[in-house]
Length: 69
Image (cartoon, rainbow, N blue to C red; front, side, top):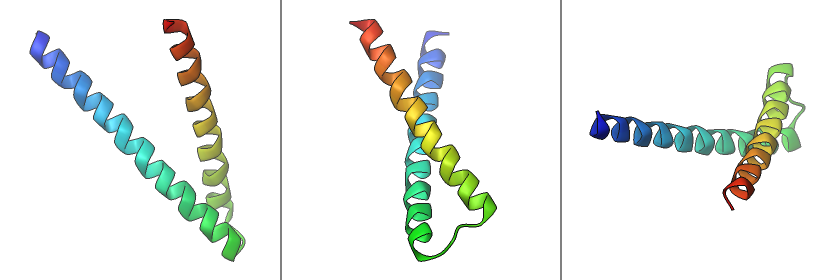
């Protein structure tokens, strides 16, 4: 069960990294579009959700980092 658990944890970490990378790219795309034109309701919602998600991710990661010290 050990090697399988390790493989699953690595796959989970990779999926988190890919999701984070793709959301960053999408955020920058929306920011660029916001400068060119008014965003649709869906785009504005996604823009706000990604900003909140980045903030929560950064804050919780920092708190967890401090907890390990």
